[in-house]
Length: 87
Image 1 (cartoon, rainbow, N blue to C red):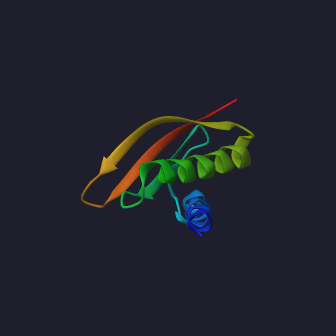
Image 2 (cartoon, one colour):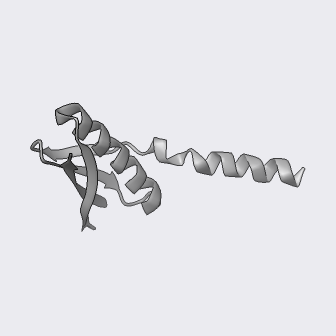
């Protein structure tokens, strides 16, 4: 019984990144900024932001996103991740 509960918890934890809805705040063809909420675990939020940035960079010019920096806005409870769109 304990093994079933543990396996269920692992399965639930593994799929939490897709519940985060990243927002595109800026895009100019060479870079994209993605906003994610700070109340979610950072590694899930960064994974969701990276996936969205990859999607946007591929769609725009067939490029790949590379994380450059993070700006945190504590008042808004938001992380802003800057990605460069590189070949």
